[in-house]
Length: 218
Image (tube, rainbow, N blue to C red; front, top):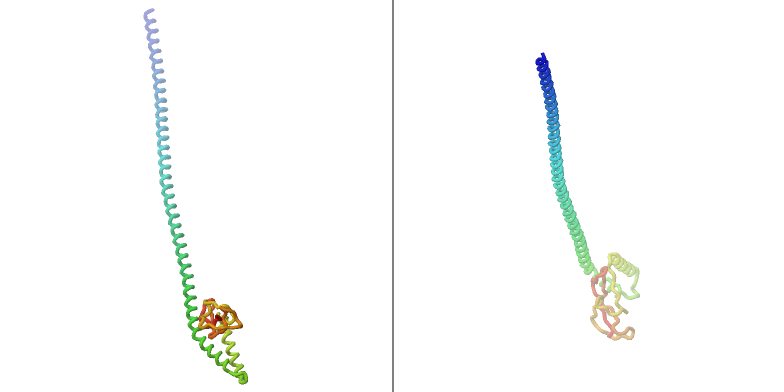
């Protein structure tokens, strides 16, 4: 009887130990599963972080590449604009020089043509003046007065276009305006002064068309 009771107690202890072991095993298995799950989550988070960092680096690299490319393109465009501006300025300067040179040449051609015409008209005026001077004072009638008026009109029209006579008599001899053809003695003028005008000289604007032919006091 006592033996049976002891066996039942031992059997009960064995069963209790087995239950504790099973519970411990189940707890261990649960802890292991949780740990593994936690470890898996940690690994996944680490992988996601690495992928995110790689993506950020790729994006930065991409942005840096396109940024550099854009900067180079802008610099090239700015250089092209500067080159075109410089070329335009040069062309404008060349055109301005061409315009001034053309105007100068045109003015010179006009003056040359005007001088040529004036030189042909001056002998006519000389003859006109000689004819008027040859008329005696007693024969100066209305016809003479009309010729004097025409002569004055001719000189006025020539003066309007810039043709003016050169002053000679009583002026100091100036080779820039006078052409001395003879020397004379004079009680009226000092030496080096023009005493007589043999042919009237004329200027067109600032240029001499015909030098005055004069006689200068010795």
